[in-house]
Length: 163
Ligand code: HEC
Ligand code: HEC
Image 1 (cartoon, rainbow, N blue to C red):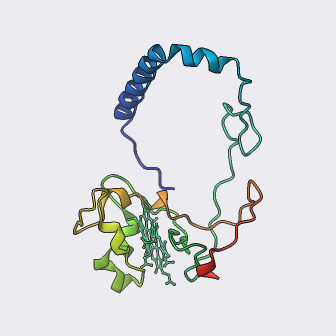
Image 2 (image 1 turned 180 degrees about the horizontal axis):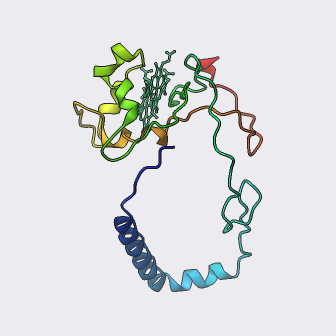
């Protein structure tokens, strides 16, 4: 599976900064916070039904669907679903297996769809000559297929332009 390696020190620093700023905000917003306390506490429940602070039960591993042709899209801006297994396709800070096939330089020989032009644009709108950092971790948006039971019901219908 593709577990991106996080810089935990940096994450911790960010969390500390957040806690500090929240602490400051609380000092300044004390009267408002006092009002909020009288409201009934929000009852949170995880989609799997477990207590919110309990860890999820251990799964039996993802079984990816068979490789298939590209899947239809349900709305215009949808990141296309991954129609093949991604087992062993590692994406780390230094290595991206997806680009081995989906990079423009590789697409012809691999037969994979080229990443689209939008993937070269930075959030400031600058066009780069290789994939933009905000599009680097492919599995943030693109998901592989597995015959899993949905956690919740869903009545979504494809957008009119896609029917
Ligand atoms: C070994 C080569 C290879 C690797 C590695 C690979 N892919 Fe693919 N991918 C393909 C091919 C080939 C297709 C097109 C299948 C077809 O057209 O029948 C495809 C299709 C796709 C599509 C569907 C595109 C569309 O238009 O619907 C997505 C999304 C995708 N891959 C994402 C990924 C991601 C994300 C990774 C990394 C986790 C990855 N792929 C790794 C070969 C690869
Ligand atoms: C932030 C979300 C996001 C990330 C990260 C991302 N994509 Fe996409 N991708 C999209 C969306 C949305 C589309 C469809 C619209 C478009 O083309 O921009 C798309 C389209 C695609 C397509 C289809 C292009 C076409 O011409 O139809 C491929 C292939 C693809 N992405 C591969 C990748 C790969 C490989 C990575 C990692 C290097 C990646 N994407 C990272 C959101 C993302």
